[in-house]
Each structure stands twice: as structure tokens, then as C-alpha cells.
Image (cartoon, rainbow, N blue to C red; front, side, top):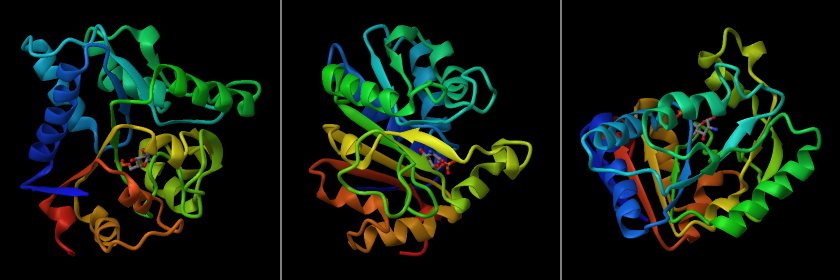
Length: 241
Ligand code: GLP
């Protein structure tokens, strides 16, 4: 795992955008794995800035998002569909037909998971996967205890994850209790993985990640077995090392 420590969130976002840009330049039909949460926001802003400056073209990009809440309308302000539209897609020349996000409202969730995984196999896997990390080490919504062999599946969200995401909803009780997430094995299929982390609240998760312990109790530790992972972490998330 290559580790890049940056001064702050802004530099972290720029470096992550550099890697996504490189991937788009290297692959005419690039496939990007994208993430939600507070952490990638700056990266998306940087990509939008570069697009507006004429440095990036999204017309040939296919995107796969990691996850979506179960039972939340795609147009709900806190759905990950809405997040991606507002944070990136509507600001660039992305073909929205090529922007894939699991459907958390599918009548048959198991069928939806199988469809999504098959699509990743068919069109993907991503040339590069952007990831954040949960306080408990989750990646996507793969909570502690998730099998490293898991593919796209329905997950019950950990209480701590619902607490952490309550800030985006009116109250914790509004946070959905389930999500569809790409599994750890689905994530590991990407050719390159970039994990970004910022702020003191992530310091303990980053310390644990860099301790080299590999365990299903700490989902991000699966990344130690991937041949091309870059961790971009700002100083405040790196402080406990
Ligand atoms: C969320 C998402 C993850 C994200 C993580 C951290 O629940 N499912 O993909 O990486 O939790 O989020 P944040 O960046 O807001 O700290």
C-alpha cells in the first residue's frame, strides 16, 4: 500500500483527482468506481473545476457507485443517487445512462444485487475505485464481520454507521437500517484503489489500517491483499500513527 500524507483535505482532494484524471487520460473508455460520504466531496469539486477548465472530458466515462440505501427514493435528498447528481454528475458532461448506482428500491433486492454484480463483470471492473473509510473500518457499506469474499449484497447498517450518517438526515431514526453495497470482493476486482481519509475522526481507523492487521473485523484491511492501493490521508487523520 502506497501512503501519501497531505497537509490538509484540499491537498488530499487534489491528489485523488490527479489519480482519477490520470485514469481518464490513460483509458479512452474509462470505468470509474465512485464513493459517497463527506470525504470525496472535495475530489468531486476538483474534478468539476478541471472539467470547466477544459482539462477533463466525462463523455466516455462509465461509473459504478459503491452503494445505496434500501427503501429510499432515488430522488430523496439523502439518497446516493441524489448525492452523485448534485456533487458531480450534473456539473460535468457525464452520460447519465452510464452512471450506475444500485437500486435500493428494487422489488427483489437479491435480484438487484446479482444484476449489479453482473454489470460490474460485464462493463467493468473499474480501472480505479475511489473509497472513503468508516470510523469502524467499513468500505462501501461493508461493516465489520463482512466476508472478504462478498460480492454485491444487502447489508444491515451498524449502529455506529447510522450514528455517523445521522448528520445528513433530520434524525438518526430517519437513517435507513439497510443498504445495498458492492462487496469486498467486488471492490477488490478494481485494477487500482484509492482510499482517501481526512480529519481527526478518521485517525484511529487509519492507525488500525496501517497496523497491517488483516481481519474481517476491520473490512479495510482486505486492501492489504490488493496489488495497487494508494492511501491519501491528511495530517489530521495521520496524527495517531
Ligand atoms: C459512508 C459510505 C462510505 C463512506 C463512509 C465514510 O457511510 N457508505 O462509502 O466512505 O461512510 O463517510 P464520510 O466520508 O462521510 O466520513
